[in-house]
Length: 136
Image (cartoon, rainbow, N blue to C red):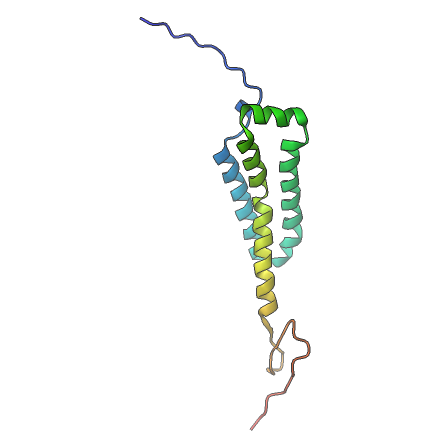
């Protein structure tokens, strides 16, 4: 009969860090929440984009700024984990910027409807002919 012996594992960083799937899932959920909020009101972009930029900076700063922490992550979890954790922290910012660029092109393409039922002009076209409709 063999006897099982358990030897303790000493990990300084790896046992306290979330897995790669958990990192991508959490940052993806934050991106969906941010884009969903901005779909409700375009004014929320003024709050969400700086917040997402701050989170992206915090994700980079957390993993790179402290040299000992940075070296411990690379030693225990590898360079790929570091790259993925920094890249995942940029997902909300990239999603909000892409959604904002799409909405900006959509808002600029919508015609302005005049109150009296005349000819509509485009937002970016201030030199368009504004004719009154002819009444027969």
